[in-house]
Image (cartoon, rainbow, N blue to C red; front, side, top):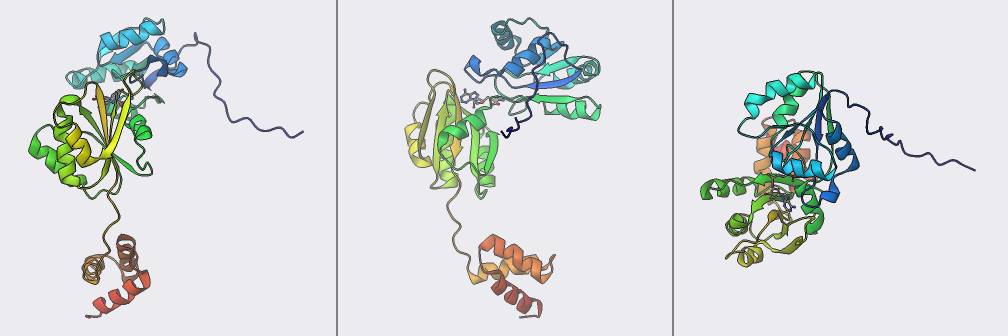
Length: 293
Ligand code: SAM
């Protein structure tokens, strides 16, 4: 009988085996504590120290897994000061990094810690797990093949509008973090800045009142105009509709610009990709432009 090869399994290490020194990025639940992975629990229980945003939040998690580990604060206000000491520790001890919820570094502190650890030749290991952005994407029922994560938009009206204008032509689903009190204003700005698009307001993922409300951006803006809902929120915006067909004039403009830095064939290919116009036609046109029309 043919043996079917088992996929490479990572042997679970006995709980008491010490962790090698280095930095461990540990994702934690975004609501349901049952989402803490066994590997995350095992790393947290064996870390020499855990860099945390808020020790009260992480203490609850440690209590749940029956572990007591030293914690040290690592957040936006002290990160620059404490980073060098943490990096020095990682050379000889396992140091874990967690945020209050979800994946560290994603709209949370940590990237500079990873950058500096790498520069110092420290081993960096990630323990993947919950992330609100990806979890919301799986609930929204909007295209997932290309997505663009915006984190939190600026709170000031003008800066928020500018940030929205900047991404208006991005051909991808957009993901934003938001809070209840700002939701109405953000949805209104998105509807005004992006026009007719589908969207979703995804709330309280993995908690008792998890919900995903899907509608057009305009309808969502109207629904949440008065009072924002309670809890934690991710806003998903579907990609823009198909581009309007490019005119000959558009194609000429693009070809002239491309010909400034590309040979004829490459210019025709680039513009064909951008406009959907037949490459051979564009090549003929590009030759004519090159020869002075
Ligand atoms: N690092 C985290 C992650 O991996 O998702 C995100 C941290 S960011 C400071 C917190 C924001 O994530 C919240 O304001 C909310 O927009 C979103 N968020 C976190 N937990 C959520 C949940 N259970 N449901 C919906 N959104 C959540």
